[in-house]
Each structure stands twice: as structure tokens, then as C-alpha cells.
Image (cartoon, rainbow, N blue to C red; front, top):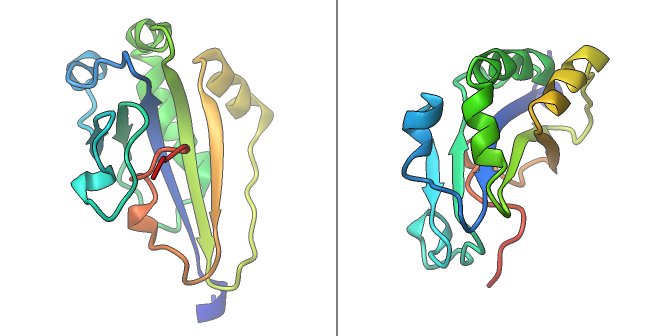
Length: 154
């Protein structure tokens, strides 16, 4: 693969909502968060970033950046399916959203992903949305992908 053909893929489980019990999720799901943000605070506690409009809890499994989405989603589903009952209790709280957040970037701005139907059915059964975020070349490092929720106020 030439330098200009490099691609990166990042998956995170993101839970968001004003009533999200962010201090309980690690124990309830058995997953150590990579990021926790509280409503009204700056993203990453950095005053140069916008304010979080809601609570956010994010977990990102550790994969090489070259591992494509289908493999990362399969791993995440195996983890979450074993905790399905607890996940459903969290998702059913008023105003809570749950998603698999997919960040993709490539050095040449081109690329795509394949999502098998059975994988999408399993995602849907868990009540998860999929949010795909595309990053143009030189726009953002893949390590920064999970910091911001989808709606950030300034």
C-alpha cells in the first residue's frame, strides 16, 4: 500500500443523554471508558473547545488503525450482546442515545466500508444507531475521533 492509500478506521461505543448515569456505566457494562464528558463542561476540559450539550460516555476497543469496521463491530457486538440486558436498561432511560460511532479517514480522501446484513441486524437488535464520520486528508488525527459528541454548542 502506498503512502497515499493509507486508511484508518476507529469505532467507539458512545452513550449520550442528560440522564445518562455516566459514573455507573463502567460497572454496569464492564467496560472502562476512554472518555467521559459532563453536560455544560468543555470537551476534554479544554476551554478552546465547545461546551458539551449533554453527558457523554465513550468506549473505544483497542484495534490497529487498519482493522476495518466489520471486524471492529463484530468484536463490539460480542461484548455488548453478553451485556444486552444491562445495556437495554441504560438505553431505555429518557433521552439516552446509544451509537456505534465510526470514524474513517484516508490520506487520499477515498475509501469505503462493507457492512454485512447480519451484522446490521445484530446492531439493530441491541438498539444501537450507527454514526459514520468521514475525515478528509490531514483534517484530524484518528486518536481524536471520539472526543466530540455530534452536537456541540459554542
